Amino acid sequence: MSLIYGLVARGSVILAEYTDSSGNFTQVTQAILEKIPPNNSKLTYVYDRYLFHYICEDGLTYMCMADDSFGRRIPFAFLQDIKEKFLATYSKERANTALPYGMNEFAKVIETRMKYFSNNPNVDKIKQVHGEVEQVKDVMVHNIERVLERGERIELLVDKTDNLNQQAFAFRKRSTALRRSMWWKNTKLMILLGFVVILLFYFIAGSVCGFPSWEGCRGGN
Image 1: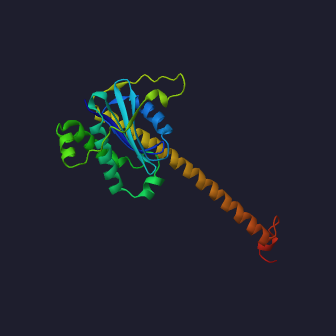
Image 2 (image 1 turned 120 degrees about the vertical axis):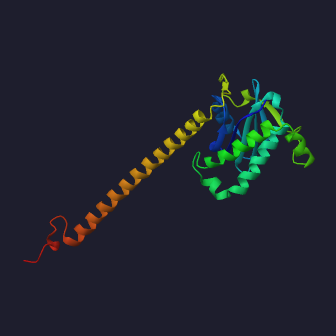
Image 3 (image 1 turned 180 degrees about the vertical axis):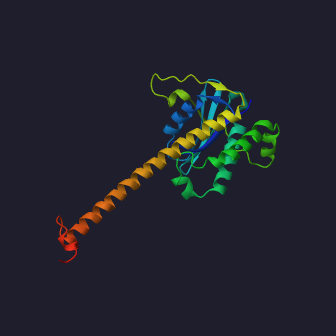
């Protein structure tokens, strides 16, 4: 009974994420992100024995996946918590311009808060005393089939192995691949710009020196 996966996204672009489990639940997450409307909203999707909860505010989505036995109060308290910490840490400008996984240093905060909300048995009572638990009775609950394509079925697999090294490697691999792709695009752009500059210089020099004979730039004889 715990939180399994947490993330912060801009639209369908994941900015930071954390999980200590392995599985294909990111496929379901991506399907949900692509269908979230741009207006502010809160919703819970049911998928088998798991619940996907999200808060969407000002173009940013805070989402988590949890066991259905974990209820909804604590997951939404967790989402509110990471939302406040994210907004206190980053400017809107950075959040609106960051590349996919470009803010994944926030994964450490997600990890810390996930463990706190998952393992502290009194967290719900503590939050209630401080008036920090939002009422979730009005948050709508939908079946996940609403966001899947007609006839599509994703067999949800979750392996709670706590294999942190494996997950960290997977996240690093994705981030590295993205950085490599962006570097290569920038390199090709710089090469193209260099070629255009050389070509421009050639034509300017040619027009001054008498293109194509270049007589005007030779020593006067």
